[in-house]
Amino acid sequence: QVDLVESGGGSVQAGRSPRLSCAASGYTDFRYCMGWFRQAPGKEREGVAVMYTGGGIPYYADSVKGRFTISQDDTWNSVHLQMNSLSADDAATYYCAARRRNCDSVSWSIDSTFDSWGQGTQVAVSS
Image 1: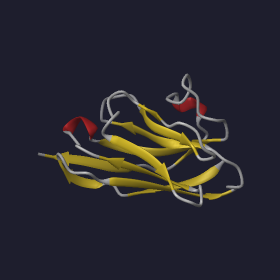
Image 2 (image 1 turned 90 degrees about the horizontal axis):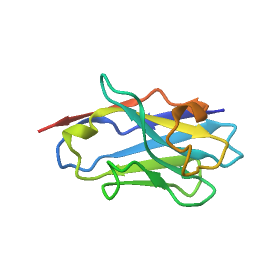
Image 3 (image 1 turned 45 degrees about the vertical axis):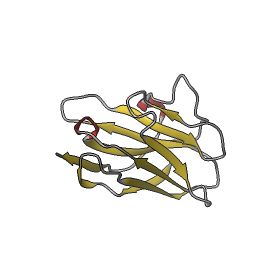
Image 4 (image 1 turned 135 degrees about the horizontal axis):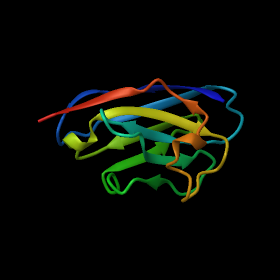
């Protein structure tokens, strides 16, 4: 497991483009499938976007494809989520998650397959 700390949440106007960041610390010598889940009040937690920090294609939820972009920095220990064209449907608590397994098209959005989680950062969307 690694320690994950999110940043970049807050209250944002609809249509704006905030950026979330997640920094991993601790035992980070390995590569991880790392990314973002979100949970809105009264709804289940859902996968938003993940990527393997060792390289490979990212995976996105259909609801954010074309609007959100996940990326990593050169240290491979941080990932970022650029969120464009934000809408009220995007309001949620966003959680950074990581697992040692590679990302794959079947399990990338299953939260139980991730063993490291951040505390979450809230994104509120105002009109």
